[in-house]
Image 1 (tube, helix red, strand yellow):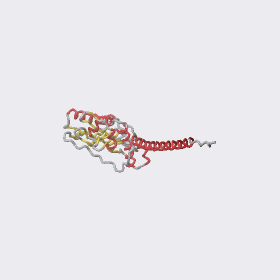
Image 2 (cartoon, rainbow, N blue to C red; image 1 turned 90 degrees about the vertical axis):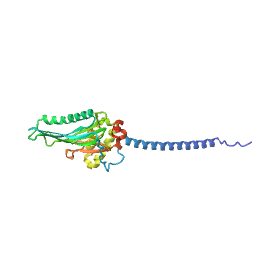
Image 3 (cartoon, rainbow, N blue to C red; image 1 turned 180 degrees about the vertical axis):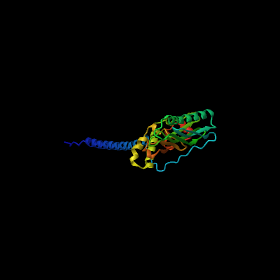
Image 4 (cartoon, rainbow, N blue to C red; image 1 turned 135 degrees about the vertical axis):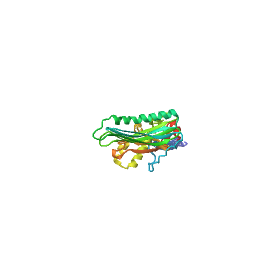
Length: 277
């Protein structure tokens, strides 16, 4: 009787199973590498989306004003008023030589803004022997054919141990004849986040006092209300933080210039065109 040859089927099945296992392992490795790379990209993107500054603000930029236009002129219009109850010494900016309607509206806006503090000084009963007082001056930040940026600043005293700093930012769109509000600058929520993270980083480096970190993080958090005192420069947005905002009164007001390179991708197209950034 012929001896029956052993079947090769189990061997073939074993080889096929081994090959299948190798293929599955290779696919798993490839998928693992893809997922790792994707996670790295997500971490990178999430870091950028939350406004994290990629590099420390070691050398803060110097503000560069928009070149002065020959069309608009800004002069000093002083107001001095003194009584037994108060002292007012205000140097008010007065704009001339621009398009008449925009010029008139801008001057009226400046008058109305300063009048609020003047009325407060005049109609608040003085406490103690010291008079109420208001002292204001101004800085022309930028004066172009399209917009004007001015910071009116000074000091108001209404009694007590000390007075308070006063800041009145004037950012005016001469093309569309309107005041520029902080909310007009952005088209993306990341605009505020970028300004917040840059400001917090810059203030921590500038002040270099770890005990102030919580005050800085609170006063410069990603809330548009924290950045209402702003001025527009050629190379960035200067944010002014008032008394007590990012630290104690003795620290004084603080300023941070946020470069346009940090936020221009999230700024409104109208503002980018207006400033040429």
